[in-house]
Length: 93
Length: 96
Picture 1: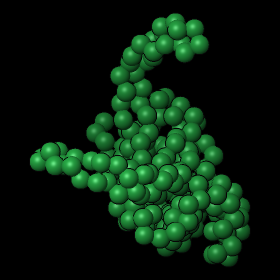
Picture 2 (picture 1 turned 30 degrees about the horizontal axis):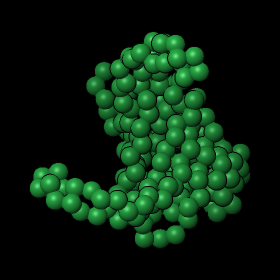
Picture 3 (picture 1 turned 180 degrees about the horizontal axis):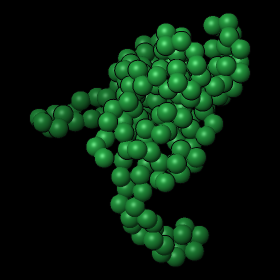
């Protein structure tokens, strides 16, 4: 399911225009992105939680040439599946 | 800058502010998005949200685990797990 499939399914199910649902879906993912960019955590009970993790700088290697390259410290997004969804994955479908 | 926790309420508020639907409709749509994504994942369908990331379901085989407290071996049963792969756009935006 892609972003546009998601929009189409919700529009159909709730009897709304796709262009309106499009704005809603964009606003939701934009808000999650902005929260993570601030370093905040996004907790959606039953679905899961998004957070960010710090990665220290390290010396990596170009796998093709074997050359050492400095990799800067960075922040990476992380998702932990919620309890209810984790249980559904193993009881349904 | 202490880390805060954003919940459904803040997402619904963002929809209300930016899209201009009622608060009730905004909250219902946030719920509908999560429900639609969860239902797709439960059927084994991957969910790909462009410029955010993709969620996919992976089947894990049985393996032997260990109770870290007692050292006792316990079988970890085969199960399905959800994997989130952030898109490059998301990774770049949180490193700005």
